[in-house]
Image (cartoon, rainbow, N blue to C red; front, side):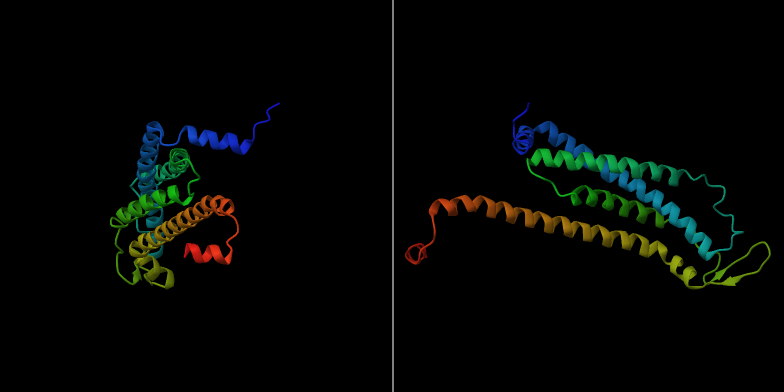
Length: 210
């Protein structure tokens, strides 16, 4: 029967890998891979959004991109799953290298940053409309003016990367805030034993320490 405290055993495991160079190397590799796979996922997401944009601003008979194989979307989907794996590894490596819990927002920031870059690069190559403000029908010539969705997706090459950038900054802000909160909690926890050892603060001791 194991009588060892689980919390103590977990703490010892963290201390064993605290500051270890192998863990640092794994952290760097996993972080770089998370960003790279995030870029790939962003490219796939951008290709997916480009298809919706084309359907919204052009007629269904517009076949300019039909001959292109959907490799970008397929590789982007693989990038999403790969990014999840490397982000999990990066979070675990950061937790063991630092010897304390790591914020789950840290790998999410890396993945979102890469996705934002990938989506921005993809958006720069999206097909322009056949005519601004009109869904041109090159077969039956039954053109239709754009509605709300047409105009919204016409500017998607700008607001999609901008939206991902805002989400990335929000998650980054949450990571920084969580880090500061954790540091404050650790500072309070470390100072509490000293306060208990010093005893209650009487008015005379308060005057002597001030």
